[in-house]
Length: 400
Image 1 (cartoon, rainbow, N blue to C red):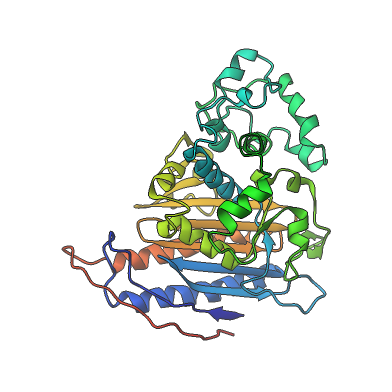
Image 2: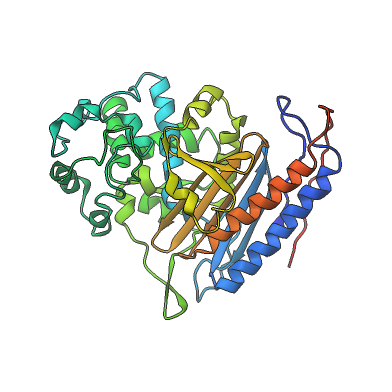
């Protein structure tokens, strides 16, 4: 596996306390160890292919690809190989929503029935309570993953929507957590009504193009339009097997419709860290990462639970209290793929990982990265407010 260091720059932005000179060695060691660990865990699990990107501040400081795009092929995964990112797509949908809301296209506190009047719960008094914020913050109060089974049966939105008239939320909207894909995706018709543009057009114009994401796309057509793409794999009889790309969740673009490479997600992290304020202003980033609802279930995640003390859902992002540090996080899982993305605003560090297999190994890789990275950063934290900076020249090396 080739490890690509791209300008390993260890200077923090001016509003942050910078790392001391010795931090460059520690950070390089953490990245090298993670690279080797990533390779070892994927080999151990037999995952066909994967990629990651690590960012600091406004730079991708390391990215790598491992394995093959499809079993039986010799085409290698590299940092520009496109994967389905599944529910990590929600981070894009929420960001796009805040941009449009800031421009007055709609209000995040608007009621859903103002745009989709035919939508109804069994008890109609709930209808007027449900806002766009509730959709984006997973706080509709509806039982988790409502009607995902119909998505996976390729039932279109128009036929799923009337099903909500048979159920009621478990609590008033805004009062409890319930992860949704169908309800989350109702932000798409709101965008179409208020802008006259499709979701694909909006995300390209407002996010992919201005952020210069080189290979990002949406939908099945976008995926197959990428020549360098990783195909999906599922496990059966203790082996990974290639399968066809499932179209089902592509019909719900805000929830799970984005395709991206490790490099795309690296640039996406840079924007979330505040380095593209013309696209995502500090005010919008604050709005995106303001907690809305507790997600106590996350505190029981096997590989994470020893580290987490609090968990919330914001707008399209999860917020994890990882020891003394807050991580902004989301994971994704769709047939044949896993994805994970997270960043620390305080430390200006982020990581994204992509797999072309439904492997739980990704659940271990995230905590491993953050435990080692945050330990190193805290170890090198300057005392008494001393301001020091360091930069490591870009290197081009490989780790076999």
